[in-house]
Length: 287
Image (tube, rainbow, N blue to C red):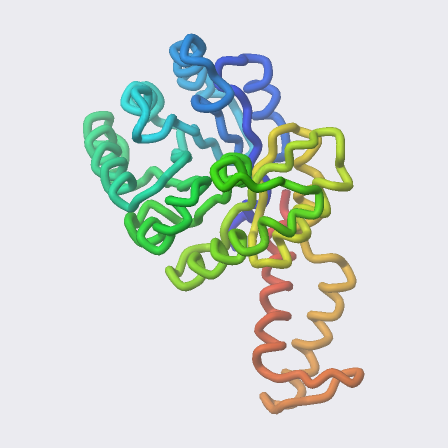
């Protein structure tokens, strides 16, 4: 069973102390940021510090968020950080499959040049504009490096002139589209947007549970305190695990026929959902 990837914790690449702290935490993935967290003046320092951090011990995986392919900074980002120790690249503000194809080709050249396994680096597209959402099917199928998509509500709500409310009802159609396209393309479940109110743990956990209920597998985090909230929200509860065990056992005892369990009709789709809950519990137990 592969390790679950629920929490994706950003750390500004130019801030040595925050990078070092992030790597000691229990986040499933640490994302060292070269984009929004860094001014143009900060980016050269951030690239150097990310390279230094690739050799530091860590418990999870390590990604770098580069600048968008349309920016003047992406090539310098890739030249600097594509080295042993990096697990993947987050590509922000993606709006077409062609951007992914260009990135894929560039990564191949750098992997060959630096003795890395060709195709070994993962890419996670961050979809955060109306144009990106319209091209989502194309993006989801453009590169075999893509295992999952990520949703960015901050830029999207700005792009669409939406008010981002605490209840997040305005995000429902866009989250649903992310989950639907991911499933249809054979990708893993997507990763949800950040929660901007750092001190609001209850709001963060509620947002994560909403995303989980819509078919997401994890959430982007902008502060270390958010990691535990995400892990709780995306892990099955003990009650869910116990019920799933009862369902699987009852169905097995029925020799594959439909069975009633405490008034609930248990048939194959119900059993498959229970099996997913048990698999999810197993994926997060060894942390």
